[in-house]
Image (cartoon, rainbow, N blue to C red; front, side):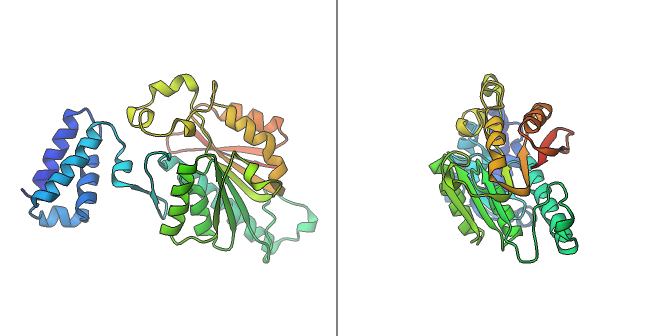
Length: 301
């Protein structure tokens, strides 16, 4: 049997199991199993051995049962990173890339401003207080796979980046991902939110916290509901538990002029903005994702 025939059969098998994205999922699994590039597969359509066909069949069976394709292939692309994932760690989403891009934009704009402006004349909002000799410090809460922390550490190799999480399993992936991507300026600590960093202060704090309302957990896609860690999804009765905890303490851990970035769930931007305002944050702004949903909140202290 040739590769494309095996791909067709795999796609049909996933379709029969009710998998919505049957073709792209089958393609990802087949190419991963064979270690083959997409172009080579479609141009050369090589002959498959019995062992290869059996391996692919086993992986397709896992997908038929609802296991996320990212867990099956073991990794996902996140910006310029290869992020390993598996049971016990949340799979990075494209929306989270928007948060990282906003942080990078802010840091670079403030860095340029810091190099050309006398800070004694007054700080701008969300001023990260960078100078030509200052060290940028970043804290990523609920770090999970480490995708946010590592993307920022890679973009700013002279920065000191920390990630915290309560999950031992997730932190194992975060540390592994640092090694895989040859990143040495990121440190991962186990503990709830700010606890592992004690009274340390940072220029930038980021978080993609659990924000799904508890009564909506059972309505999630089975790939999420049955496979991804509930602790990384459950945001409490109204989905706001972690936003309240984070924003009530973040001011104590931000340097003067520091900036907070939060990923938001659907229809949560107005409520989180109110919480941020009540906690003394200024210049609160929300950036939409490509679907027009308020996805990233930026706030200065």
